[in-house]
Image (tube, rainbow, N blue to C red):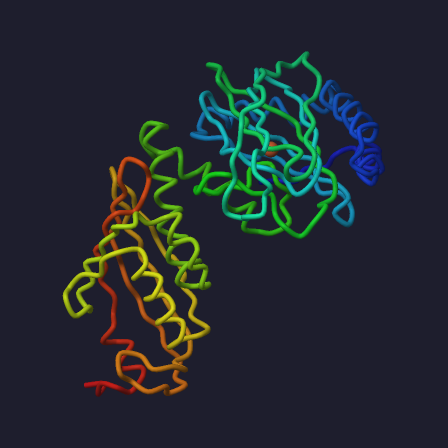
Length: 355
Ligand SMILES: [Fe+2]
């Protein structure tokens, strides 16, 4: 990602527009400002056309350029779409307008059928889809339920689109409606969003066919969320989303050698978090092949509750582990083969002599 200079008058103009409330007339103003920029030969020549050369090596969509206005007033981004790339279905934390500068971009728009009270669930219905060519003007989205969509490039050549986002309207990030989260068009308010987009773009270059990559990415994400968010943040509700009810974990440290059922995993999370209330998990590496994902992680925290019969010590614990997870055709995790350094953790608790 680079942030080359943009004509100061242009950015000031966009900042002014972005300060307006997300009402229809404000979006119209923003749209005409964006079109002005997209059709400005100097801008296109300096910032858009040079991207076509680097696009040849891209395996998936990515944000090639980003300019941030003052104090989060706006964000202008250039998206690059290789053939057959597309985003997840997602929403945004701000209003946005976009137009196509090179090629054709397909947009599918969705409406929400439920009341949105459950953060991790949504019932969506496709409302329309259309192709946006370079002469088709702009598409607009409003925050959250006002702009749930998926974008992609169905064509045979590279497409490039220009996006302008207004200020964030709330603290909740725009999100995907599929387990494999990627905050596509959302503002880059944090480093993670930005680096994820770039990392994804690089990662995709070296992988297999797109459909298999999509499945692998989704499975990776589920395996990561189970570790980092369910175990590491106590979001037990994720267990039902990710695990099959008859999930089996072949845990070598369990009495019977296996733990059966998603409900038992929830109890396990509660048990771990009782023993180590500040427990966090960090995924260090993941490899996906076919229906399996290998995840290497580090877990750490403070031993403040009973753990495998060891009374709380207040000791800092760090434990490493690797597990293989298998997913079924519907995308549910059905089996797991873990190995984790329980002995090392027990030593750090002083329950086992160091030598
Ligand atoms: Fe978007």
